[in-house]
Image 1: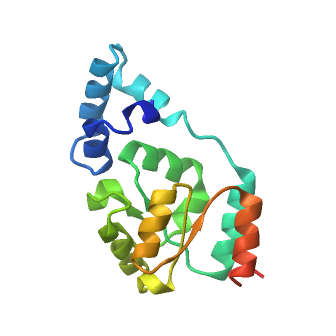
Image 2 (image 1 turned 180 degrees about the horizontal axis):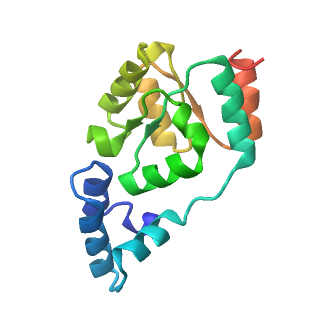
Length: 165
């Protein structure tokens, strides 16, 4: 569903907090000719996530060594679901979330806001993302950037960069 709507203006409006979850639900259901209650839509919309214990373990190790921020193009329903079901995400002092900032990656402003939310300069950040365009956007503002491929290669890169022992 997300991939289907990835380039649709309604998704951009939703991810940047310009429309409510209810309006988004209504628009998606109309476009796809679906008859779903808002509650049923929420369940389906958030059913794309599954536990990733190896990633949670790595994230816990990183949290133990350095402050961790979150910069995410995310909607309020996904954030509520993830922050409830993945408690490790709540360890980030001030997540930078597109539905709150109104800005999506790779807009340079998103990276500057995320660095400021962490109280550091972009040059002091390590940015990790699974989308090359976002990694390049972070590089453009001076962040050291890593393209996420899998947990093992990320762990190796963090050890190489002396972020993890």
